[in-house]
Image 1 (cartoon, rainbow, N blue to C red):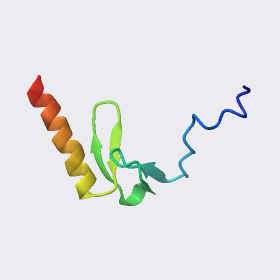
Image 2 (cartoon, rainbow, N blue to C red; image 1 turned 180 degrees about the vertical axis):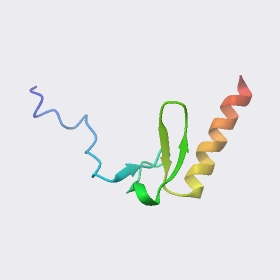
Image 3 (cartoon, rainbow, N blue to C red; image 1 turned 90 degrees about the vertical axis):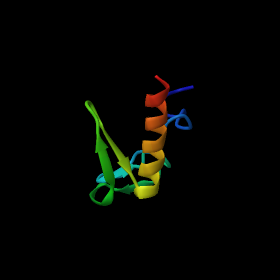
Length: 65
């Protein structure tokens, strides 16, 4: 297959100024997104519920170590 016809594997581009929630992948304006900055990247969340879900998963992974 040519590169042009193989678009099913690629996610649609995010509109300029928008970001995807790290948990539910909802596209939201960057200006209203909550964020958590790590060493090399920033993660965005659409709201407190998604941030709490992400935080709980992160804490569980850290306690298993």
